[in-house]
Image (cartoon, rainbow, N blue to C red; front, top):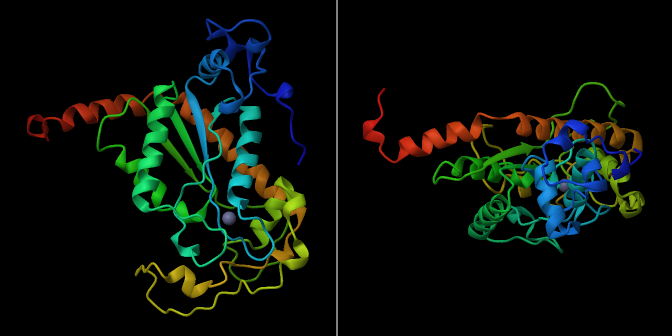
Length: 297
Ligand SMILES: [Zn+2]
């Protein structure tokens, strides 16, 4: 995939018209999307340009088979998010990797914060983003272990009033088409898909020659009905914290996956920008929640 320069980003003139304070070249769409690269004054312009829409790409630090870097999820989600904001401008929050990863605590390099801290830090982060003008926050999830945490966090926003909306883009379902996959078994973690994606985002960090040095096969050590959940399921099936076969990866598959992921992020940014309803309905809900006995069926 050819990375687009920011100069070529697709920020429209119509977008620029809504910024009363925007002047000169910055109004032409050359603002960095990265929060940490903006000056304070340019940050104000960025908020105007993005119409208060900000991305929080969410990664993790965990083992990724024998051949991928610990930060694979963080590196890949930031790559896809940066590509997306080059097409549809939004401010990108800095590196964030404080998610749920208890199931990999037995592997070197895993950083697993307590559940309390995960939720508190995420809430304070989105609160601070919103205090700075990010009224529409799209959390782009890059880590499978967050798949329960993030919907819970989104739901928890109903507990107390917030003057902003949290949207969660929780992974991207594989789309039909693209290069045929070679894997025959499961491919959940550091396997053919994820290794292919990393060959696009950070090819220099992929050690393909090591990918077959451990097994990523499903060891099926617990047998329970599908609708019964137990936390040890992941370790029971994939004790090497590896699921699939990364040695089958190809750059072509990675390009296809990344293209779809980037398109889904662009779609989510545009949907958030266009969404005039969620905040209004949230406010209606918060107001009624103060006096539930007065509401009518
Ligand atoms: Zn991963």
